[in-house]
Length: 491
Length: 95
Image 1: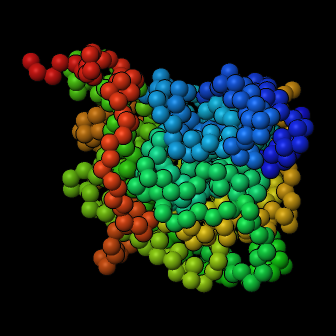
Image 2: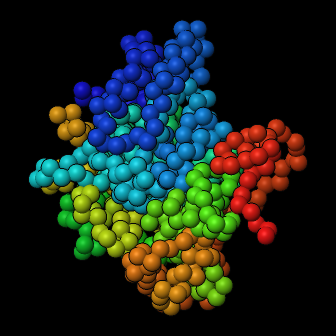
Image 3: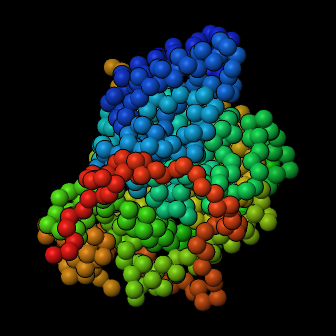
């Protein structure tokens, strides 16, 4: 089945009674069943989804809808706490955890009448760029190279969220992005991934990784859908002290692809000989296209770009080591018996966490430990200030910044580098945006010589999501990217 | 600083993660590689720079000190691996 479903088109189909929520939900549940080989879902909430869909259909009959999008099924990254539905963060240590509360973001989805199909696979505690660190095994990218039958990574950490949208196992999904975890997998799967400004979307009830960087956002098929989804999930939340009091806008209603007179910056520090020729070509073509559509293209400099990744790999592990201290086998999650209390802690954490999570906790513990705190942690926070001021200066000159989303297209699962630092380089273009707290979006632009999607990233100033979406919509409208993967898993 | 066997075991103690003998070699290789990567920051002069801990320019809000019904004893204990009456149970701490 090739479908062109989007949040927007499904709202119209439901409104005109061309399809019911129950029929739609059943269709997606069938796709999930036949797409098991992709390993997108950790938990499928089949019965609950069908009951919720029936309730939505009743609301539609009685003209008591929660929103225009009432009855549309979505997928949720397994990092959002969902009341009564297992929430694992793709970790063994939380594999039996059933929250008795609902995250603010998923509550907002429910308030809009969206139906949850289930919980999507991701890297363990959102730490990874390939989805290979999941306790439940890797997700397979719906895309394959024309030259090989080998399976490709979907990116990460929101690998299941991106692959599910790309493979039609849901129409849109929720992800989280700490250093690129929405934008990088979106780029690898030909989908649209939006990381909002830090503070735009509530973090309450999301399993914490690095609290000063984490931000939730949507993965969708179109920029329009990203605007629709951001309308649903954004806004101030008193339960999250870092949630912004800046009023949200009506992103979808105000979507305006007119970019005449806008200034778009091309940062020279993102240029590299190592960038694949096809990615460089897409980047150049996109700049040309924006120029034709009325924008002015300016060369800009973000001098501390290359320091972002090392700073990130101090700050994120430091925050992670603090956040993950709570998994001690006492209050929830896995407990492994020990000779005494300390032995129980150590065995529980040793057996409950995977290798990448352990590496990051140990590095984080090290950079926060006595004698190294100033040399590493404070140093990295100072670098963070320099990175932030790079962007403050840049946005005095330009409205938006255009870069590639990733240094390569999707690669083979078997070819993942064994050196952790080589893996970290996947996020080289996305990490600075998190450190500076800015909104960023990855949109598919073209396919490379192997027929794999190339994503481009747009960045704007904090809380300028409207402008970000407008520029992205301009590109989307002009190029009309409509490539879809061959569904090899159905054969 | 390089991670050798002794410093790694100490770090494991601090982080409350037991590290088995057979994992020590690979782990020290990985952590040394990460440390070498982040050490490049030492070359950047930051004498005149203040640290940023959070990118949001917003003071923490003060809210009313209201009683609500969140986090009841039953809710908090619901996922406990071992509990008795209204308590979490842990291995004996005092001899």
